Length: 210
Image 1 (cartoon, rainbow, N blue to C red):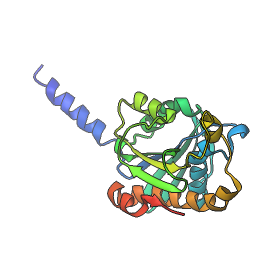
Image 2: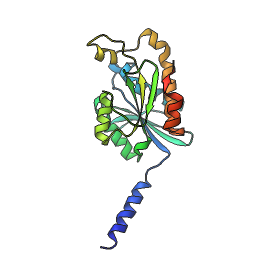
Image 3: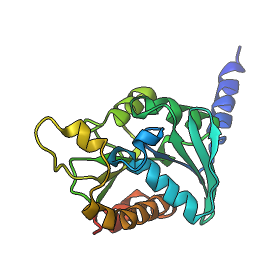
């Protein structure tokens, strides 16, 4: 009996060192299917595609998500696009966090935000769901909101009662002129988060980039 506390301590320490501080999980929020391709709600997916393309990541089908692994500045970044649809995003996040042994502090969720002006980036190390169903489900699944999120402003230029149509709609011709640059800046912010941390990334990228 006198050895049990020591063994429990040893097991705890062993579990702690399984996590790789140089491994990150970057989650793009969106919906699968051609009906949702290129919509405002899928900006998280599109930013993952931009990031994967820049570092030659090849997408594969995995459990609850499409995934790819890229190497950036000595870090391993696991990028995922959940196939659970937005409202059940937490299932994919929990699975990949667990199987890849990634600490909660090394998770970044990328999503659309209609409360921010179009082209505005806002990184936070934790926070409320802001009414976003994807974040609500991730909060519930992970047991809290203490993980980083990069919100990408899509604006709110819709009339009363047209919010769903706006969010699930495609970019206007004027927005299309800037959207590729926004995706690139957001992808760069993801890399910055992994390489120099939340504080300095916030100072550099929390702004309207267009």
